Every structure is written in structure tokens, then in C-alpha cells.
Amino acid sequence: MDEGAKNKKFLEEIFKTLRDRSKLRLNCKVCKFRDSCGGCRARAYNYFGDITAPDPGYVNNIECWNRLHKEEEIMKAM
Ligand code: SF4
Image (cartoon, rainbow, N blue to C red; front, top):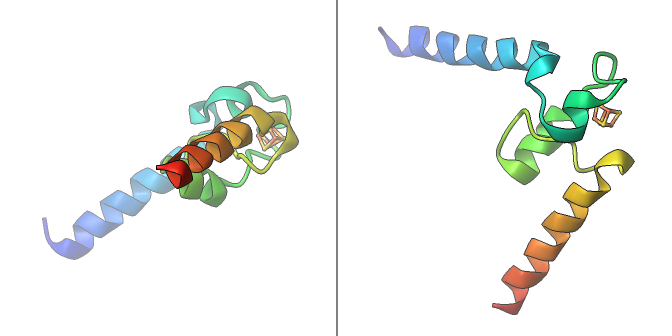
């Protein structure tokens, strides 16, 4: 498989995952707004390295945000 075909397949998998809201995790998975919202996938990826992670910028996911903040404080103290 050439490089272009590999990239195409890689992107197809990403977009397939992004379209399937049942693959979201934690609060975004069970949220009644997930089909209309789904959260910011870019933010989820930026903070968790996972496009299916909860969007830590949304108020219902405050525990995720607090956990990230706590981890950041621990890293600063090291
Ligand atoms: S970001 Fe908030 S409203 Fe959107 S799907 Fe996730 S929990 Fe629901």
C-alpha cells in the first residue's frame, strides 16, 4: 500500500470514529445532547490524546477538567 493510500485509510478511520457518537466516552457517551453536540473533539484530543474522550471544556465534564488541573499541579511541583 503506498503512502497516499495509507493516509487515506488512516483519515477514513478517524472520520468514521468521529461520526459514530456511540464511541464517545464517559459523560459525552451518555449525554442526551451527544447527537447534536458531541463535544469538541479537538479539545478532547488535545487534553487526553483521544478523540473519543470527554470534552473537558464543557461544564458537565468539570471532574475531567479538575483531574487535568490536579495533574498539572503535580507536574509543576516535581
Ligand atoms: S460536551 Fe457536554 S453537551 Fe456536548 S456531548 Fe459532551 S457532555 Fe453532552
